Length: 446
Image (tube, rainbow, N blue to C red; front, side, top):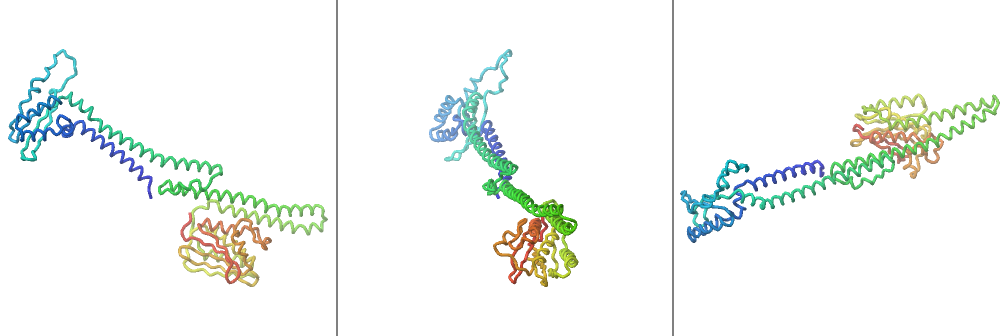
């Protein structure tokens, strides 16, 4: 991953190294003796040229070279051999042209004690191996003028470094601010319910922290859009489903108003039945809505106890129906027991509704890798293949089953599985009947 952290860190250290390096370079350019000797035209290669002429033509020709150099660059030079003997004449310019001390009444700024700067260099002849010691004296005025001219190349280097750092900083800043602006627009669109899931597709392809953030934001946006869409669809379906029992209640009440006492006695059971249906529908709608609420931290679930409790409940309510259970030992699951119990209860109710009398309903639980497969099978007619994909949608009922329930049982089971980071698998059993399987991960859901 090309981490944004390392980019910022590299930019910081690059700027620090360049600033430190240029500071050292400027310091050496201004004060380093070796650099002055190597770059000042009055001293550059003078030792090599003097040594070559001295050894080839003698002291007089070598002294002529020093005198010409002094007249041109105002740099006086003395040369000593390894024994300390002078090989050049004494410096008359330095000795006789020294400016007189200023009068006491002069208010000019204090000058250095010596009007020159002295530098030294040792040079060894490549031909004879003889060593020579050169002493240079350059006036401060000449040195200041040369410094002004010679600062062009370090200042050029500084300018180039600043340009490079500016471009690098602009690229780094753009690589941070542009994705943030995209995220800001995506947040605004999400708040206006006009968010498009592909608006951050390119940003999600980045291999840094902003790419991970964009990927997570896409998932969050898709989740929120899905929730908003499901809530809107749920409201439409609820309004549609509530019309039928309310219309039947209104018709029954209208008939009861015009009926005599005997006819009213026949209508009261129908009114009671419609009220019970309406109450059951509202209860299932509320149960579906509660699945999206915060249920707190996940807890360990005793699957054996949960299945046994459901079997006992149905043994009391439907004593003529048989529920068989086959649970693998050692199954451990974390989640929300009430939610899982409600999901399994809805699956059992559907299985008992469609399974013929005399046929048992089977519960199987086994481990498959890191997942728990909890399935409920009936021996009923099953569902046509073209309708399996839509089973589990709120208020959807396959053709031929419209009179059974409200179409919320499988929706509650599917939502409960999704809250456990799992899924609901619906299929026809190969040996006949219908099987609903809760595929739940054994890890703790968040």
